[in-house]
Image (cartoon, rainbow, N blue to C red; front, side, top):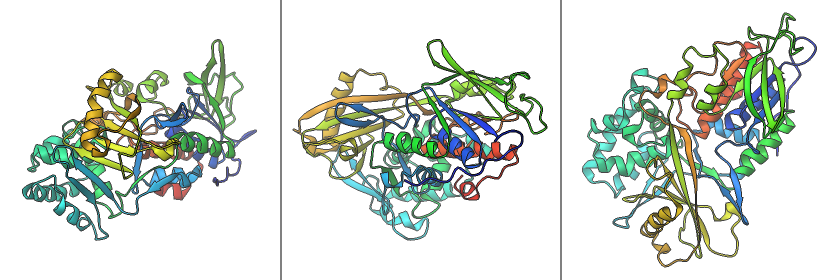
Length: 489
């Protein structure tokens, strides 16, 4: 494993500048690494016993189970920078060329969404022309809508308040076209159906992924447990960079460091205060146990509602906006069969409650025959709290429709994982609620996929937020930010 060097010690006064990063998800780990690489002495605190946020693994008997199926696209340059930075490139697989098999559960017919090497948008023409789940008229309408989408600017604030479903309907997209194509991609990336999604975020997804570069939408995924990447390799990179990592350490308060606490010194030698010279972070490490951390810089990288509870007074002009950023769930159904039922890495479905099915056999460590498949279900508000028995009754027959080889196969195990607040809800108007990385208080910054990255709640968005927070922090300290990382963000 290779990691970037920690960099020289910099700053004024008796020692290097210091930073505390609160939150050990992808945003927090990214920020901690970028700040440490610039020479800051960094402490990272995380309430959980592991790093990785909501992209993690756990043990179930002999298996290593990912809490959910997380993928990225070739256009996700920041996340790929992160993989290189933590030395985990060898633990992922990226398609040589976009290829998504799509089965219609009602007819059994399989179509494909793929690309050629032709320039955009011609790279998708052949795939669309042969797509069997839409009529010839519907396929033609998709091309017209795609050209209209290509002309939109995702950063235009006016798009934020428009719902994507209404925009599609206004451009001749039938309900079947939305289900079999637009939602097939959009639900998985936005965690919302078209009618519930901001046109601005949808435009970002489709323009960047499908209409920017022929290779942009090639799909990548972890070929090892997510914990091996984000926790294992991530922790190794942090250790190598000299970052102090505190797990099971929950931040309870962030405030200006008192004038007499002996904390870090400002550039003029004054005792640290919220006027630009320093912060104190109170953390709880166990019943009746805790620690007070002082630092020049704080990056708060926790979910938006938790962040609201930790915001120092005056950090945001309208802090209540964070409470208006909704959340959306993701349900994952895990099934272990006694034989192979899926003959490819993944399969998408239409005409069924099943959305995407992934083969997790090798990455989970399953041995002794059989196959482990994971069904990833986004935006399932009506199912997230259903009992396991009811989900089993619902999904096993549907899997037999989507995977004919599963008919008659024995089920060795069936379980579910639920992330009730998996992502922020990309509803129309959410863009006006998302804050930037910098706040109104010197030395205090925000990170998280819910901040104003321009991206939906993805691993890419989380990493970009960490890079932007560290860039703002280093700029405030008068320190350079690596230009290669700037290009990724």
